[in-house]
Amino acid sequence: MSFDRTQIEEGVREVLEEALGVDAEDVKPTSTLTGDLGAESIDFLDIQFRLEKKFSTPAKPFKIEQGELFPENMLQDASMVENGKVTDKGFTLLKAKLPHIDFSNFEKDRSVGKLGEVFTVKSLTDFVDNKLKA
Amino acid sequence: MRWMWIDMMVAFEPGHRLTAVKNVSLAEDHLHDHFADQPIMPASLMLEGMAQTAGVLVGSTRGFKEKVILAKIGSATIDADVIPGQTIRYDAVIERVDESGASTKGTISCFDHRTGVWTDIGSTEIVFSHIDNNRSGLNFPKENFVFGENFKRLLNAAGLSQVMTAAGVTGP
Image (cartoon, rainbow over all chains, first blue to last red; front, side):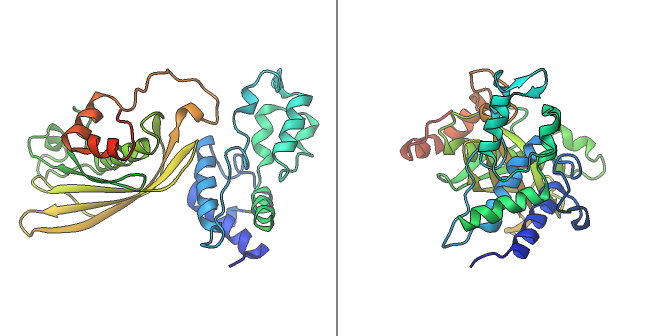
């Protein structure tokens, strides 16, 4: 069994409805997980597990490695953040580790507090789509 | 032992399933207020019993080396009251476990000694976090404060410490 783009969008929406207790109509491609849908850090683990379950098939398990979808503890490293902003080194690493994320808005001021806003419904869908094709 | 909400672990399949039971007694203080005229086991404490069962199961998968903390109750339904004299069974199954945590599913059942029948009365989805691998990068004490003496006694009493040792799982 393979998933087309519409099935992936539906699957991601169902995962977010279940994990965050939000209504289907609130889950739009541009919705941010933390800002619009109210996700907190612990929800990311739940979302990861639910995506794996949703998109695994007996023939092809869908396994997301730690740090592959969301950044792990890298921003605790002092060389990655300076005065509340992601450094050049940190930004390069973020882009390398999270190629499914569109950083164009974040790049303007790189405030750590705004990092959560880069995770949108579309970025999750793109991540799943790319990973399933790989 | 005031906050042990399981009496005995009764079945263990390493890495997969742990089942525990609790006998509900009229001698338990909290039932006198919940409620005076009609004592019933609080649903919140049944959730705690399930969380303890599932938490031990998650801890066992990594030899009790991780500090396993309840992160999120994804869903919980309990459809029937449990009264003194009845027995509750918590059946926890691991869905997924990795470096950062685990997700579990649980079934809560009730045994009525008058009829001799087990009835499923609830279900849970609980996510646990391994807090030393938490996303926020916070540091916690080195000693494992989650799996202490009380859990060790329970495991010993149930004969599960030997089962776990045989399965290559280090006891708490």
